[in-house]
Image (cartoon, rainbow, N blue to C red; front, side):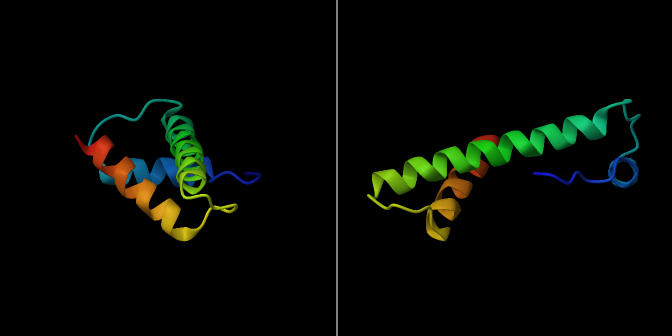
Length: 75
């Protein structure tokens, strides 16, 4: 991933949505969290494709894993 989200724009969005104080590097932590989520999604999609004996990761692999990940993160 060569491009990053502009820090100022990300901080503005974070401040707009909450009434709490935002730390100095909160925007970087948000980007890091997104990258970790995408990495985990890619890994588990690869495993799902391998289980189905598919040579490529297809859309339905990613969707199935994304549903499972969202359920596990919500509670």
